[in-house]
Image 1 (cartoon, each protein chain N blue to C red):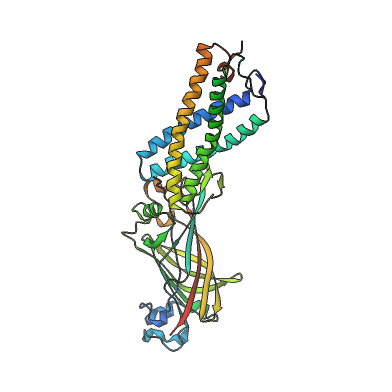
Image 2: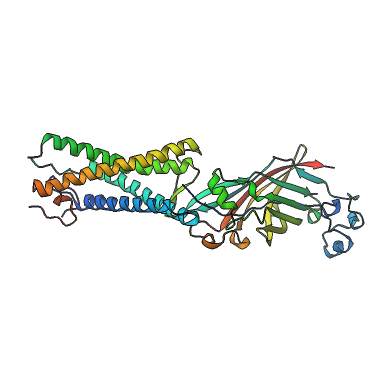
Length: 218
Length: 183
């Protein structure tokens, strides 16, 4: 009998290594356009892993957590995305050339309550029928405080916005682990139409928390 | 009219708590009935109002119980018969128990369904239990059953008050009325 909803948005992050071919649109000219693209990548010519490519890391399926938290009728509500994929091309000495790409399957959202999940996935909120995935793509990292920040674009619910994602990258036995948290506005991405536009019952702020182990890949 | 109770009449705080809770309970019933026919956002909003008012009743119930324990309780009239005293006592105990049990089972329902409960967006109550579908179903049924018990008990309680007023013609009802005058 309870029909609630909640709104939020999702996000994720990853990177792509332009040189690795993961992101096809990395031909010659762009390199010039982006000062960050390191000269030694010489990538433009060949989309395959060129010499000088940054170390590449990928998320093992099922590993990592991407949680969201929002306020619903005055009560904090948490959920997570069961399915998302992360790729990182990263070298701590070449942050500007590092890339992160995250793809989130929005319909994999789970707030531990089926009815609420269904409302969230419905046309007035995430509209997963029309927008099954959210993507975050950062084309560079920068230092910020004691951690890093990814500079990139988040496409959610069909809306693309510049989003800076703070994160920490720590080295592990077989790769790295990305973690951090940030807050985004669901309404900036149009998540919440009709009555759900109101923030009276469902807050605009959606906090995202992520901890994703990545393994080094060839 | 004094703020505190006396052995002859209820004080203003006791009266205010009594009637406020009566009105809130009627309101709760109206919201719950209406929510049954709603869907989506409207239902979500209605159920949250129901929870907010329910938690209000819960907090008022605590104040009321403490106030009752800290105050004299007006005596029943000398002519009240033993069976009437027993009936009055049982219904009063039940009503007090129910103004706690209704909100508590509602709160449990919410927690078991992984919905946090707040008080008018002002603060949040802790979750009583983790997500538990079976407990949710059980509490849902209990909440509804207890409401039936509440209605029956309240009717008996009101019938007793009316009997005192119209048949026995004593002060028992009047002393709980907001502006009732005692003879």
